[in-house]
Length: 174
Image (tube, rainbow, N blue to C red; front, side, top):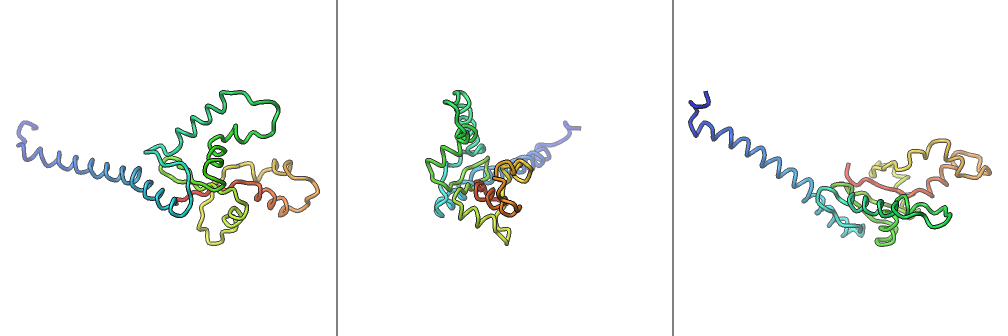
């Protein structure tokens, strides 16, 4: 049956396959390269600086390297300051770019807020303009009670203190 097909009859399915592959490649490059680079330029113009976007992986490879370097060496002495060891990328980028910055998890940008006023503004967002990322899953559990003194009696007082202590991370793409 294949022997009976002419060259022009075989050319049509091959052209369709190449067309679909070309369209898929264009969509892939748009979503993984062009869109993040344009978004990074826009965020930089708005003052939300951070490590630059790397194709396909974002900053995940840099995060992995910093984490491995942090875990490779032992902690010096007894210290309760474990944040730079557990989240070395966030600690390093806070020192480099300031308290508010963006980083890339693949092609998705995340805005890290550590200024209390901005965290309160995002937390009190009534229009749901910001999509919040839940970093600390234990936040609403009983563990939070151990973090707060027993003098505070109401749940709202506990929640206010926990909210002010958190670092807000906002996902910038819906």
